[in-house]
Image (cartoon, rainbow, N blue to C red; front, side):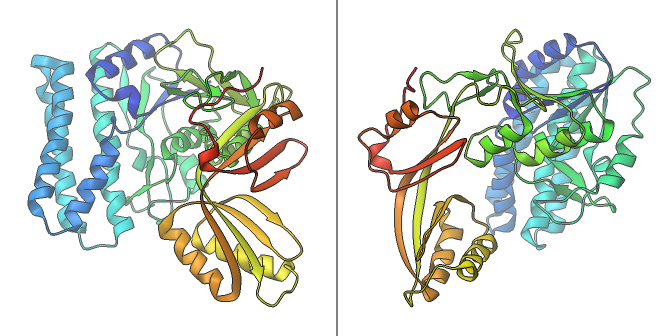
Length: 431
């Protein structure tokens, strides 16, 4: 059965990393194998800056950024192929020239459309180099354009997949020649061939889309960490790896702020019971973490998520009335329209409390809108601590000596909101 591997930008950030990628894939000779690759390193950021320059009036800045993009990718080609670099270099130059032409053609179109026609080149450039290097390293490969495989609507920057059309194209892939297929993450196209992007965590989602359509055996996402942890290892000095959790638990962790796999990636895998494993591309002996159907080990290790830079809004009716269902419906409808996510919602007889990420461009209009009709009290700079499967001892340790501004708890999740100054930069969870 087919395997799908996905590699992020860190795993192909330079020539040395791409060589390592080839060595890694050589250890997995089983076929069919589909390899989904992101843009190299910080290329997407560079393309976003290039887009801003193209839509501005500073042509010199645009030309400088385009030249830097060309120079960086050609330097990687030169480092990989040496004297044999010219054929691959020609392909890279042709892609950069096409990007330049598209900027000229689309600079006056709406930004989401222009964005998708620009940013897709990060993946096109990276996969061109990776596929060529795999061939050079003796791994028979075929480069495939994801814009010809993943069919979407025209909702640019957050395109929706046409599953029937995509399945028809993906199932048409011919794996009989034993070659692995290299394609791009994050991008697709409309039925007419106009490039689109899939939004947040789009490359992981691409791997899941292809796996779903191929009814794959498994998906592996290769990262610079050995797997999923019960807390951010940069924040908690005794964080432990989660060896196996269910799809539902992974979605719950993501909802509460963990940097695990996005729910939109898990949904198509869950539908076909395709397991997803996160593994380290640096340490191939590390066991990794698997997300699958089995939920028996979900509560073995408590998980703690810290959400920084939070804003607490306490919203009350101006007429001293109940915060009834109609008012809650109104407030939450405005929240959805503003594109905001409430990490904590708590209702009382005469108030509704919302804990929100501090996105000024979205938050400020939302608060202003509410203030017209409600009495709004606001507190900024807070830390929301979410605990899954925590016992009383853990909750006491996390709250000791701290002022709790809001709290919610059910059978498997506890949420507490603290002033940011009371939360240390590093934590040690009780044993």
